[in-house]
Image (cartoon, rainbow, N blue to C red; front, side):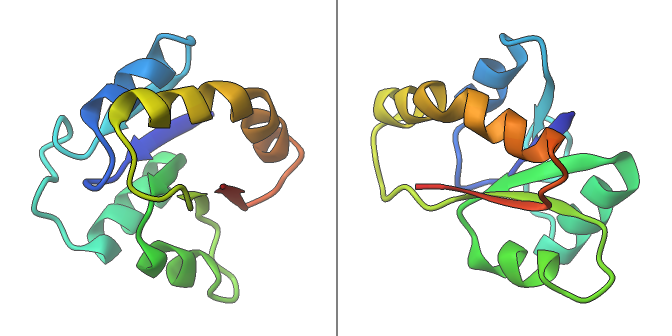
Amino acid sequence: MTFLIDNQLPVALARWIAARGVDAVHVLDAGMGGADDRDIWATAVAQGRIVVSKDEDFFHLASRPGDAGRLLWVRVGNTRRVALLARFDAAWRAITSAFEDGQRIVELR
């Protein structure tokens, strides 16, 4: 399981995931800070990464018939980084289990 973190989420989230022994990269660290959502999606699919984003556009990309991409759709409102990471910490086991069970779109609320 590997992740590509989108722009609206902090670089600290990629570091938090990586600290759990899971490959995670932020789009800024991947040189894709100004990339279009479709380019980010295509890169993630090509690399077998799960996109982590708050952007509804990714939900629409993930919902296309025949699309193989995976999405962790963060539906948590605007919060401070500490609160966001605490929410991920509380849900991490359920998130990883859902993807391991074959879900393609997982929502974090």
